[in-house]
Image 1 (tube, rainbow, N blue to C red):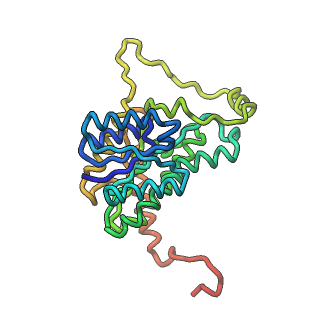
Image 2: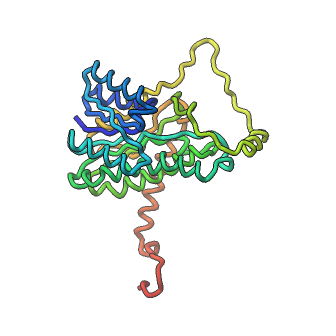
Image 3: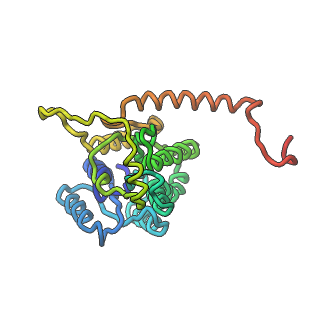
Length: 296
């Protein structure tokens, strides 16, 4: 059994991940902000479900944009069940509109949740993970952050998630800590309807007036079409958690939509990354540019 902290559990992927891990015996801490306020109903629903299902799940208050909230949540878990074994950085906000139409304050707010929020949680659990030489951090990213198709603030934030998570992966590996990037395709979740809208409507309208290539959005009318099931993402997290330490992949793509070609892209990227790492070990490439007095 692992002690697992999942962020963003008021609905969508987070709620499913928490339920799935708890059902399989992991000690799940389903975190969300506003446990006594805006998300009181979601917290009650999860708590009552856990009691009726007799599974080890607890709801904990955690706002990923607050250093204090994150610290207090992790300290509560440590005092109750010991160190956190697994973190699932799932909390995220979506957005709708052209980049130019978002204010800088809006951009900063979304990046604070989607990117820095995960790092706040990581920084709270990493000291204990380093001390014991073990731990797993899963970042829920998106294939839209791996292959920028139409652009936008949300895909750009997920591109940043990819960079932070992969950088962390390489830096904490010597301590026995693993980082896995989960890349879901398109799934129907509440985050889509709750997306942040760009505040400058005039700019949004200007972009909307420009013709763009049409896409075939027609679905089968014979009832054969089934939308992707978000449970696939929760099942993928469970699979990653249960893989033996040292055997987990850096990236895992999940879902039938918006995923075509992404696994091959990841494989080609990794081959190129390894090649570049070899090149940078050559003496003629290992140049550090600094003050003239430091050069030898």
